[in-house]
Structure formats: structure tokens, C-alpha cells
Image 1 (cartoon, helix red, strand yellow):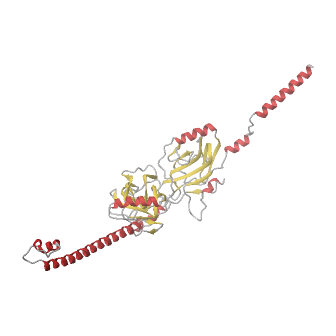
Image 2: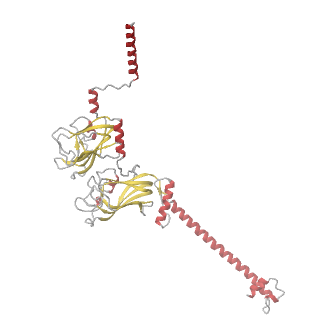
Length: 463
């Protein structure tokens, strides 16, 4: 009996243990090798600010993650005699991860490694503040084959932002790397929550979410028009590349920051413009407009300053300037009216820009009508023609002309009718007077002549 009780007890315990195990959460088994593999993850998407465009050299961004140190990435060939730049490499891990370290491998010649740069992070991808302690000035390579930075940050994005380049043997400044990699692991729920909270507390500058509006650019002047110069044409102002720039013509006022220059972006049809984006030359800010107004028009001739869009001392802490209009405008063109500029590397004051783009969408008929009424009031000289669907409709001008025509026609008809009535009245009066004259002797008044039947006629005769 005792043995049977012991047996039953053992069986019961076993069954209880089995039930408990069946109801317990199951965790995947992770061995040391799997952990190591996840930490050496390279499953991120990599994009760069620019790549060297040379058919004879493979210098694309794909070389940064191919595992081959003999293949290289080079930034674009732009202003290569100037070390200042605005280049970046962006790693997107697809979700919020714990990024323990980032490794940058220089090329075999160990040249053109970033000089001034920072390593930034971001959860949403619209801002990339530098990880504390990872901002570098005149960085010097160590003796190691690669440079590893132990950032230990929970983020989705990592951005290496380069603002100063180092030179190659020919004295040209570029950015070049052989490989980029990162060690990551999965972040915990608490780490993700904290990262998202930290990201939400970052102060963000205004952003124009609308796409770039296609436009044709024109300017008051362009250095490209001066004999013996090239590469500064106004077409560079909205080509989407910071590698090309516009510069005003070299004039007599180069020793004074004040100027009278302008850039106009003309659209094919009326657009609802929410704001503009402006980029300076790389990181140098040479000739960047210091004081300027942003203006709008519907006829391409009369320009009016957008409400709140006058700037008297534009800062140059960043190469990208976003200007969101307090009140969006419906316009066929926008203009930057430049009143003064900052100094360039040669000590001259000549307005220069890499990019000037308008952002928005096509305007609706109601928006066009409302804007036209405002515009006509501002012009104060009559209706204006509006471009719609690329064709000059001139609907308000036509309507005004028709109204004027009908007004003149009605006035003329009224005058003509008045003349006819006066003429007929005069003829009738004459007949009545002649009749009274025949009936009334000159010696009698109208009231004493019994033969006069119509006293009114007689009175007219007498008078």
C-alpha cells in the first residue's frame, strides 16, 4: 500500500509539472553563435548625400556595404578646393534598434577620411541630433584598420554628417570610405519607449511637407553671362543639386553688402504655395542672402511680399533654410528679392545660392478666384490675367472689357433716346404754338378770346 501511494504521488507530481510546463511561456533558445550573428548585423538600408559621377570610376554607395575594402565610395566632385561641405551617410535599420557601435573603414590610401563630422541618431528620420560625445573636429585616424565608435544609442537611423573634408594627394577635398558597418541588437520595449519620447522632445524647425513645384528660374543677373565664366547659371538654382550654384553678376558694388538682385521661380499654372526651401553653397554660406523678401504674383509683373516673409538678418547656422508661409499664397510665380548678401571667400559681396525651390500643390479654382480678387485689389489698376493649365485665359480682363463695352453701349443708347424725345417734344410744341397763333389776336390775351379752346396752347403762344 505504501509503495502504491508513493507511485501515485510521483505520477501526480509529474502530471502537475507537465501541466505547468504546458502553460508556461516558451522562449526561443539563443546560443552564443546566434547572438554574435545578430550583433554583427548589416541588414540596414544605406543612402548617401552624393556620389562621384565619373564613368571611369566605380565610386557608388553600394561599395560601402559589399564587404570588399578595395571598392570605394567617393562624394561628388564639387568645390573641391574648399574643405567645407555638406555630405552625409544615412543608415536605416527599418525599426528602432539598439545600435552599439558604428565602424567606418577608410580607403587603402587612408585619404579623404571625414575631418569634421558627427554621428547623429533619429527615430522618425526628420531630425538627427548628434549622439553626445560623438562630434569631431579635425579627426585624426588611429593606427587601426577601421575606426569604431561605440555610440550605444537606441534609434532607427544613424547619420554620419560631414561638414569638413580632408584632401587627397592633389590637394582636392573629397569624402571617401571603403566600408560602413554597425553592431546592433533588438531593443527592449522600455528602450523603444524612451527613445520615442526623447525624439518627440527634440525641437524641430518648420518643414514643408509638400513636394517641390516644377518651375522655370530667372534672375536679375548671372555670373554665367559674363564672358570667360561658367558654372553659375540661374538654371542651377532649382536643379535639385547642391553641387551646382547660381551667382549674381560681378558688379561695381562688390564691396558693399547691399544689393538689388532677385530670383524668380515661374510655374506653368497657378500653384498653392506653402513655403520655400533655400540651400547655401555646401557649408560655406558664401554670398548667402542676408536680407530678403519672399514675394508672390499672378501676372509676373506685380510682386507683393508674402505676409511675415521678410528677413533682415538671416542666420547661417545651417545650409538648409525652410520658410513656411504663415498664410499660403496662390501664385503663378514666387520671387526672392535680395537686399543684401554675406561675404564670400574673396572678401566680396555677391549673392550666391545652391538651391531655391517652392513647395506646394496645384491651386483649385476657388483658390485662384480668391487670390485674383486680392491681387486685383493690391494692383489697384484693373483686372489682371491669370494663367491656368498653361494657357493665358485672361478671364478677368475679358470680363472687364465686356462690362466696359456694354456700359458704353447703354450710355450711347440712352443719349440717343433722349435726343429723339427732345426732338419729338420740340416738333409737337411748335405745332401747338402755330395753332394758337392763328386763333389768338395779338391785341387780346389768351383769356379774353372766346375762340381759343386750349388755354395751354394760348399760354404757350403768349409766352
